[in-house]
Amino acid sequence: MDKKFNECGTLVYNSETEEGEVSLTREFNNDLAVVRLDVLRDWIDELTNIYNDSLDDFTEELREDRRH
Image (cartoon, rainbow, N blue to C red; front, top):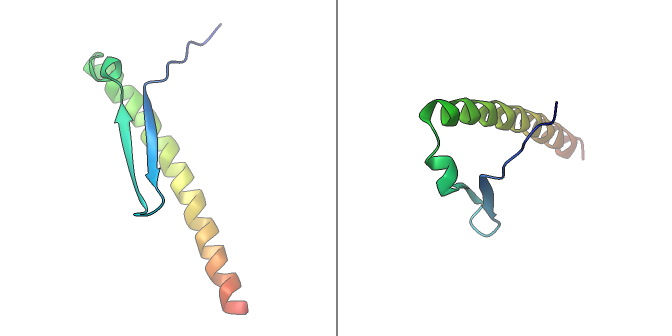
């Protein structure tokens, strides 16, 4: 079964302010609420996993800094 993927937004990061934001397309925002809710939950889960991995990396970096 072929999967159809649609780009429907962008994650933006400002390296000067260290702030990030999400910009979603009009098409995504106009989709059915049930579709948006399902997709947003999937993204939140994925981002939570990435966040937790990064937190583990940060914790390890702190440990290494204390050793030096």
